[in-house]
Image (cartoon, rainbow, N blue to C red; front, top):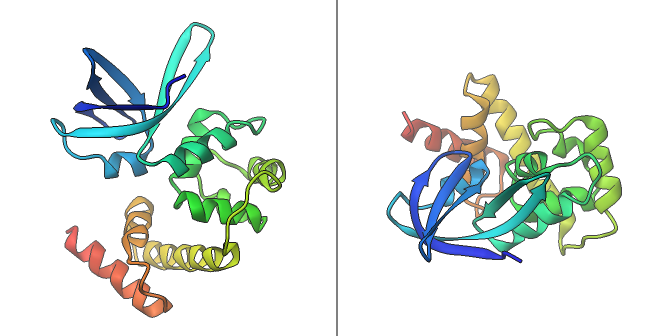
Length: 193
């Protein structure tokens, strides 16, 4: 029914944004990844949306790109995974890497999401493994493993988990060696101070 909303951002918070479109203000729940990609208040933006109706409450969830929306929809088909849990899973990495993790049956990568335990992660893998496909899944998993290692090193150096994850995610994909990626993440963290 509702696929996307294009309008002016009138409010932007880490958990939601309000887009003004056609005389309406749409309050759209978002995850941290979408929040970081949204331009500032007063700018125009387009969010791909999923609408959920439960009891008498209507909620709209928005994403910066369509692959995130599609993965959100798939995650919501898994018993025990609600919209908030799905948003959390989408914050651990790109939709492509998360999909590759599911294909490679790597539940250990999914437990990095807030509110996702081992059993839920295993259920996600079991339920979605045969419903998705992506080329080069093994290569993507290797990159995701390297990111997890870099994130762990940064946390070991005293950086906040959230900052370590953001810096690791901002490292250019053109850097392949562990050392180069770690140095780039440290430079990113150094600029934030």
